[in-house]
Image (tube, rainbow, N blue to C red; front, top):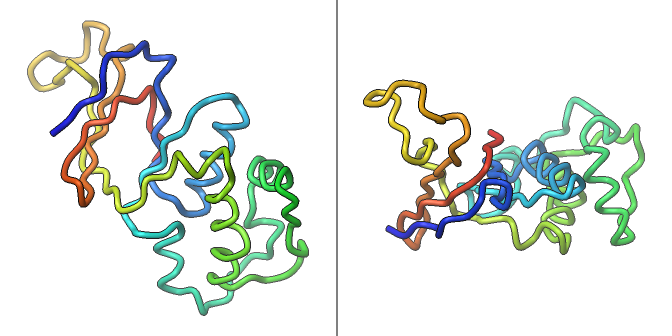
Length: 161
């Protein structure tokens, strides 16, 4: 098991769990705010859960399915938003939105596929042994991730799940 080296908390990435519409929208928001995301997706592709029902039409049109920050990021690459009132299928959402967003130069290196988050804890603070005091809130978080490469502990400043 490996561990990241020491770093000041403000230099650490923000962990996002899941590379679906909400997770990638959160990553786009973080990038737009000058923060560094690291997205952990248990599946082998972005939108893994959506791919299971890809043939189904969504209940909301495109205008409600895309995040404003993601749209701004994608427009940098020449991407054009689908017609606002059009009703996409799950496959459309993945192919026309999630895959281009995940491939964006400012996001693609931040997404770890096949990476299942096993646990999240404060570094150096065990609530059961030490209680809640002693600077626990200021301590960085350790995200334990399992992938084909084994387990890895990743130090982060915050987690979005």
